Amino acid sequence: MYTLKKFHADSLLRDEKRFRSFYDAVPLSRQQKVDRIKDPETKAVSLGVGMLIHEMAESFHIRETDIITNEYGKPMVAGGGPPYFNVSHKHLWAVIAVSKRGDIGVDIESVGLYRPKMAERYFTPNEVRWLNDIRDENKRRYEFYKMWTMKEAYGKMTGGGLLDGLEFDTTEKFPLLRFTTQDMEDGYIVTVCERA
Image (tube, rainbow, N blue to C red; front, side, top):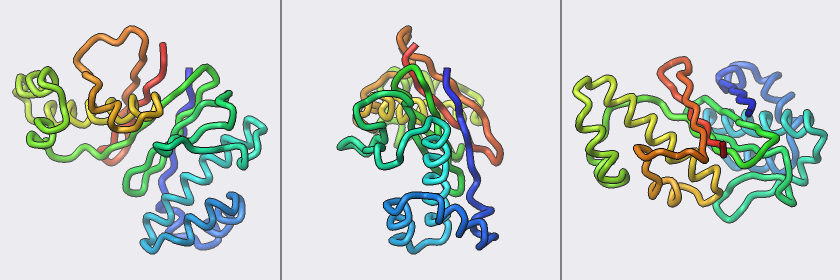
């Protein structure tokens, strides 16, 4: 089982005092990352991600200096022990999925237009056929982004990044994995991948 927390960074754009309190709470490495970002929305989301990680670290009584990233950028506790967590962000949304049991991956996307050329390029032939068999355009659009978030979450769970995810066929049975997709406000979806 996992915990999923979400944060919308709009409040950080509107409230300088809140932005400053978040900024002061996160470690220097996150502050420096935020300082390098020019775009105000990207800056706010990066700070939101930092605060989600900060709150997770506090709740598990771990030092944020013990959080490292692998060569693909996957964050983890040094030594590979619990908590296992993963973060994702899209536009002004940031999410974190946390598990005590094992590796976890999360991805958030905004459901937009169906992109058949992207599906043909990055999805497996089985996935493309499955999508093409869906007659309802809204359902096809939704399923396209659901598949994309499954691929991303899988690649983030394995630690191999999108390369692992692109090779993963979401139409096959996966008894050793559990995927959970949730609809969010404003047409966003989040998918979490964990080992069953």
